[in-house]
Length: 532
Image 1 (tube, rainbow, N blue to C red):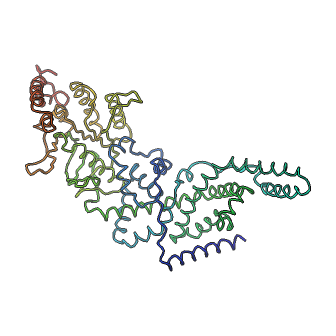
Image 2 (image 1 turned 60 degrees about the vertical axis):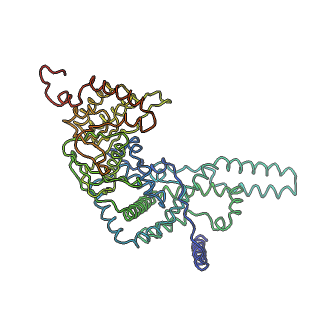
Image 3 (image 1 turned 120 degrees about the horizontal axis):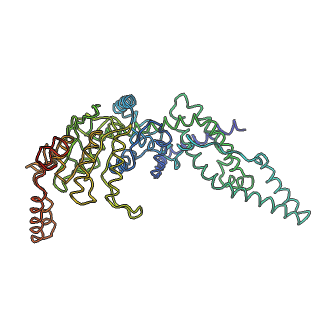
């Protein structure tokens, strides 16, 4: 019977598709279910090896990688989204990046191939449950001892109902049989319902694998059919419900298919990874075809970094900026609101993309394929009882530990130690950055210009500002004219407040001394007779 049911169902499915084409009915709209971030992260979590390194949560959030991933993964199933996330978060090694670049070039040269792969994998976009955790973790459900005797319950119910003709007391047996059926149904309801969604995703995966037409296609088709409900249940959902309640058909199907999935888990896992990689490649190829401003990133030495006309693709009208570093990090100054934080995010995003995908949003790029650490959005925490400065100290310790550990990388720091007074902020920042920059490639932006001279032996000074034509440029040097007080007047505080602020600033400037006077403190020899 099973040998006849499967071909019959396939024939009905093909006939239905033919009727739709004949009537010019539109194809079913893919679901593109809005998965939680934790679901998208599952593949990376379960495949991470003991020596692998993934971006930490703060770096992921500081560099706005979630919005970038959302732009990449539009019209992509959960499998493709998980693979894109995994590559972004963990990066690829040199061999994997080279192979990916070759695949992307081939796809870009053949748009018809992109469309064909998307159409073939379309069923996966109907999935509403991720299964990576299921395919890599856990054990099969142990079937209860009574499972083979479930056929007796509906039989007992029918016999007891028939016996009512002979004796009204037979209703007691009917009630007992109904109680057992309902109790078992309620006990396994949540587990069966959850499994139904996971099994649906697995079957959609097997359908997509079969449509690929590769060596695994036939086995995927057979496996998909073995996981399906009976022909009667598929044709008549109402009849299926009666079978579930009065014969525990759904519970039996759960244990039967669970055993099959875990027996075939290695094969299903391979299918998931293969389809995920195909979808991710197609998504990247489509992304590059739609973006004119990008280049393949060249690998640079660990202490070298160069990017020309780098942009942030999430900006509506990004301005290309360039920077080149060799043996030193960078101290970046600039007026308020000029875009120092955006520049660091642009650079961080392109460093992550170079390591994950091999390309950057720039004219040219030579970048180290290193982990990236960001410290840009430290905040105080009412729930955690942490002030801003305590939060900043915790992040600084994490960066120092990373620099001293097996995965040193590029550190991007915006306005370090804002949460304490000016003198101690400069002192603490200088000490931390001097130590950190000895181990890692550091780029830091700050309004504390004293840091430029204190750290010139570690960090090359760069100033982000607008040229006479209004264009944004990053040039060597330190900001020579601040605009914080001028912005008071521009934002409606009035001339009186602006003049008072200017008088205080003039006094502080004389009190604290010239910023360049700190050159010798950390980076050079102390001159006799000069205050240390």
